[in-house]
Image (cartoon, rainbow, N blue to C red; front, top):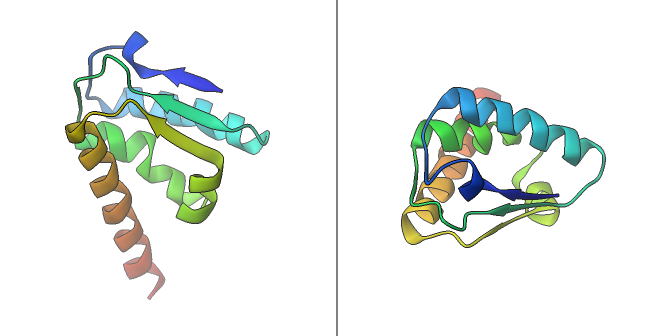
Length: 99
């Protein structure tokens, strides 16, 4: 599955949009599909969008499994940093809850 995020908008910023996309992503991951997130033409994503769309995937899959089953392409430095920060933050939250 290839998700062309730039076809949605150049700026992705709402939790509700992130939630809708995550549900679609989860469906495809459960079917065993490989998911490619293509950020061509995306200038910005908010932390809330990234957490809802990507961070919450860690509630079902661990980061190693997600790395095997997904890829992020055409990310600018801002988008890449936001996604990376979100994954790290969500992992820390899950670790603190588990302890």
